[in-house]
Image (cartoon, rainbow, N blue to C red; front, side, top):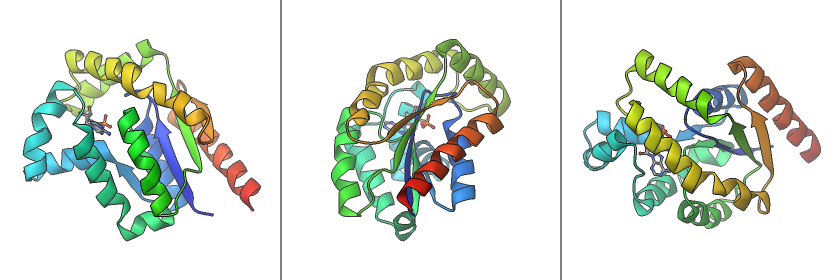
Length: 195
Ligand code: AMP
């Protein structure tokens, strides 16, 4: 069974880490819009130059741009095997645009995994990551902006998906291995019920 997974959660919840592990263990591509944008910036492409100041401020890249980016990415052949989407959608407009795209490629979401984490823990983890990795978008000011945007624009999508998909809350305030074990259990149950 192809797994078409969306992973949602605040910055610092470990989305990227879990998505990478999922990608490796289920053999599906990890589609991270944040990684795609950072790569464009590192390569100095036109897109990269355009989005660099936006990422540095912690704001969101305009919906139209993101929707086009993801449309192109999902049309690549590897996405036909399934995917783990990380960082998209982040707004209602993006979620609404994603629906027909997934229908077109015949890949409805198998599950929406919501990594849940208290905000103070998310802040603490982001500050630590800022020190360790030196990500230019992890400063105390941008962390505040990004978490506010998550709460205002992205978190309401959980409710939106609840009546459209299979929303599964995951307790994110645990070790990486514990969180991954829970995700594996959820996905194994999904595969069993589809078999
Ligand atoms: P992330 O690594 O997912 O936290 O993304 C890093 C930054 O890229 C975000 O703070 C936004 O500036 C931008 N970004 C990534 N994905 C999106 C999206 N779906 N919509 C708007 N901006 C995005």
